[in-house]
Length: 280
Image 1 (cartoon, helix red, strand yellow):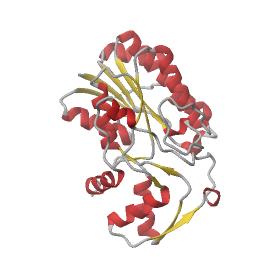
Image 2 (cartoon, rainbow, N blue to C red):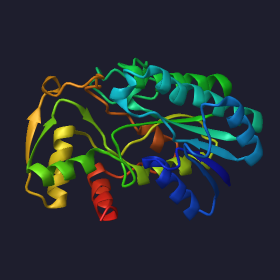
Image 3 (cartoon, rainbow, N blue to C red):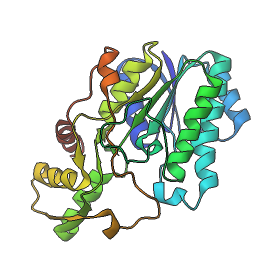
């Protein structure tokens, strides 16, 4: 297949490109310097020229805190660029997959979020990603949306990398224990994205690694697997204030993955182990 990947230089995008190439797809990876995805005419011209079978839209404005003071840029990248790509996909007859987020929910649930659970984003990042979903659905009758959470991969800045660095520098860290979710390894997510894209099982999916933990429990497991003696102190969200509110409960129900006959992503502890081997 001929596949366009946006955000190809990013944490997820790099693994998506790598996994696509392993399966002998013809990949057009685009980063910020290759195409301004917030320029509608440029996007339409590029997609028309390449004529891809599918577009995997990984590019996003993901700085959750910065988005609070730069809503305009976040909206351009997360919402408008998605709309332009969806219009181009529609015109061109290409499939399109958009990577979304647990931040479309407010985190007040006490059981895993189903794909049809009412959305209620807490901040600008979640609002702009949800706007991207809605604009995609407006222009395409058939689409893929994958909401994911707590993403970590060797090609980006992420919680695992930060913990390993702080652990080496300090030997003691404080981590919030009252926010719960499921980590997601980019390699596993990329493989599922491609598996999904190869089908016509359109719709919204939730994808993360199996299992649930708090950020505190995630940190403890990181140091355990890395063989580092680091003291981890549990903090409350109130003790660690940030510009943007975080959902307290980010667990996504992945049951649609197995219901549709796909392979569930492995347990997050196994995925973390694979990440630590890959990052050596």
